[in-house]
Image (cartoon, rainbow, N blue to C red; front, top):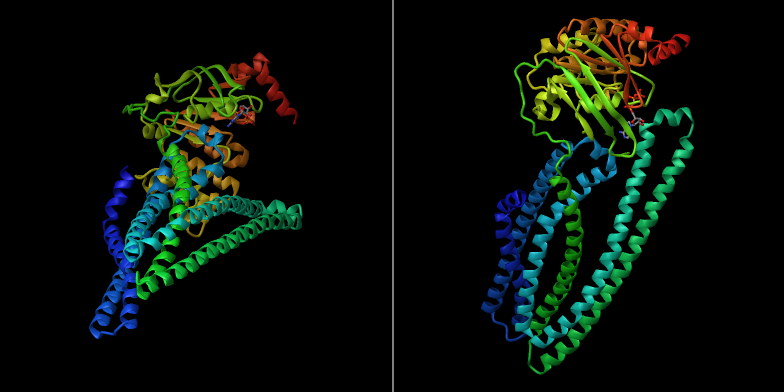
Length: 566
Ligand SMILES: Nc1ncnc2c1ncn2[C@@H]1O[C@H](COP(=O)(O)OP(=O)(O)OP(=O)(O)O)[C@@H](O)[C@H]1O
């Protein structure tokens, strides 16, 4: 409603120019006929000049107003589409991760690009064209009645046929158009995939195979285009034939009416001009009606996303001045929304203390990263809860919470922009000293200094211009600059050399009051942890220091032994 009100406000000029344009357009054929009559009968200069003047004035009025109307309308459409895209984008980024896992990426991008554009057209273009065409049609029929009511009834008898032909054509055309769009998307997808994975294509020497695959998809699009063109040609033929048939009938009966003195030659010319315009209007009305039905479906899908409330609430308000960072996992049970039948965590309980390092270890796929995702509130557990300083995570203010808990993942995602932009990602008030300090702790400062533009160096799309280890260190700096109370490192050592790893560990050890949670596969790196937790079957299997667990000779001991052998 808010968006529509905005659009209506900007449409005042549009409505005014539209009114002038419709009014002027309607009278042009009338005065054309009048000029012909004056020329054909006893010629009077005054009558001729006045008819010519009115014809000129209406033509001018129609052209200028139609130009204004077009310009204003295009501006309104692009402004509306832009606003709806931003609103939809904001609504999408608020959704929980489970939403993105259950809905295909293609569907989301299609909502953002295609459906919003279609919606913009419905609200601005179609409604206005429908209104304009309808008013024009009614006006034209009234003027045609004044010229000859008998011929008008004859013309109106053709209307259902024109509407039917248009309807059949629109249905076929829309179906082919949709298939063509899908086929074009598949063709682009094939090209994107190859560009993205060009290294694999080269190393497996599959250039020829990929070119053939691309050619196949292009041919599919081409054959759909040919079918579309054939349908259009048949439609144009049917349209011309019905139009021609009607004109022959009008000329035949028109000649009879002129002979009987029921109408003049000029009136017949005016009538024929109106009749050809009327056919166009009926076709437009049928088309717009069908198009609006499609757009309503598209708009429905967009509104579904706009109105969707994220399943993970962000309404918490707690923002304590002092946060200690004590984390308690209390009897968690969890299954991913995409696979609800598989329980990943079952009655999982654990305590992470401030100033201590906890390491989660265990075989792959046992639920270590899931513990981290739940702590970040990317998913909501089905049973139990996680407490931060004794309060449920959901009761904390969303912004506050994500400033206090920072995560460095196995492969940090960087965004195009400078190194500094990536380190200060999401922070507005971050000084250069803080950035350099965090980069120093993450062992990134030295390599950044060697770059020509230092912290202003562009990292490229997805950080592609940096090595894996450099991306990892920037990811660590991005987490440290927030001075989080809880820091989570998810298997960060795999892409770091031993020297960097040692430096980073020393820097982390200097943050005395920080709660540190580390996931590690290389068990040697977590020997100094205050508590090592072995996760197995979605539960805490063993817990203790390195020495205690080695003495226990259980799962940890076995994992450690396996790593020593290899
Ligand atoms: N997004 C997801 N949707 C559905 N199932 C998932 C998802 N992510 C992980 N899983 C499943 O949940 C289980 C636990 O995965 P998780 O990533 O937590 O294990 P992990 O112990 O961290 O493994 P690794 O050491 O290999 O990182 C696995 O069986 C995995 O297949």
